[in-house]
Length: 276
Image (cartoon, rainbow, N blue to C red):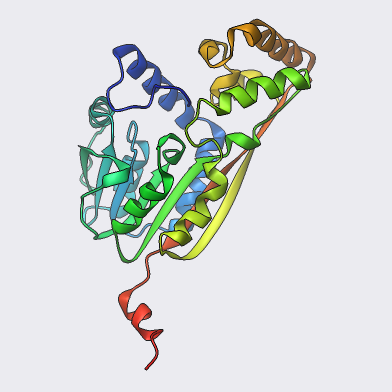
């Protein structure tokens, strides 16, 4: 989501909007497919120590708690104290799960040590002022041999068909300006390599939908309820055109979501590459 909703100290209305959006999107088939693909790449083991940065409502923190079991642990971090509270309120501990600790923290300046086996950061980097600093902070949180997974959207590759092309380009270009890092998804692999991580792997889940209702639940610029994301002069024409295209069976949306995973080199491996 773009705009000023995901921030450290939102208003009550902004917090309610953010929670509603996150709860809705977590059930979307694309996000579920993205998370399943990313977890498959990570293969989280029992006993692992997991860091979930930008935990939101904590769905993945709770999922990881089940994966790591009672011998593992999960630390769930979010910049917004109200979101941390919302995640805690949704947590129902189980004896079969690892312990989950919820706390406030900034992805750009994590100070939680460097002993995590897995670091997860989903749809966060699009909101930060400096992705390079954020990815460096994620990498420093890993123990040697640990793996980081970053997931993000490429709003610059968002395609909408069925609506006048000039109107579509104008609205989507303006929407990108409301996102701090609209094309960060396509840069994830490079940023992990630049942070000194090795064995990078990248996947893309390409979201395609021909249903406006389905798409609007995950892409805010297509949601009439988020009309503030569209310039007033284009607002009525845009949403009316979307609904007409949908009614005619002409509507289509497509957009990639990228997953990148990389490993922190072990010191022994680094030393072995040095000349004798």
